[in-house]
Length: 206
Image 1 (cartoon, one colour):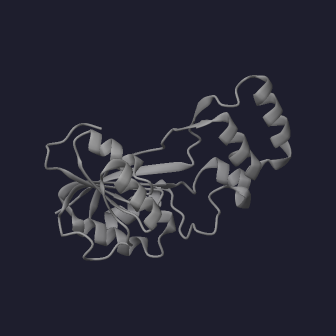
Image 2 (spheres, helix red, strand yellow):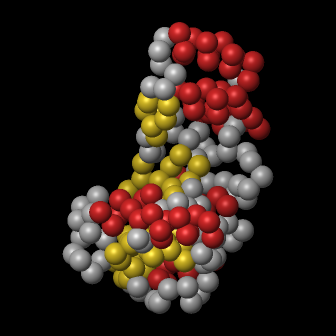
């Protein structure tokens, strides 16, 4: 993340425990968060010294054209009205400002193979997006899409087996656990990118 001028403001919409905001602050951004879970907001404020509001998004949550950049990591799939919330975020972003939205990707081979067993299908996921539908939502709300990518995640083999395999292939978990432990790989960190998450970056048009 390139260091911005000292007066640049960034909002992390759905900021959780504030880890991204901490990194943004370290790189010179004036960091703000919006998080509906009070415990997470309190932790972020106390641990990282960032400004986090414990609330849902409202029209007057922040002033118009207040932010230079807005991020939303794994949030839009939880929203009852993603188009309405996107319009509110657009109002709070300056003209030419940058928005990044990351969501689970519904159009991927792992969804086709696993179907209802895929980890995307949980009760609090109210909407499902592909790169195409997310781009369409952004362009219809007054944004110009400038980039998209599938993020690479890093996790331990332990997490991969106990969380991912336990949901998709539960019968194999004891075998995989035994193999990983014997190989000394149980706590090894691995990079995973199977295209099941997509991020789109867009610019606010005037």
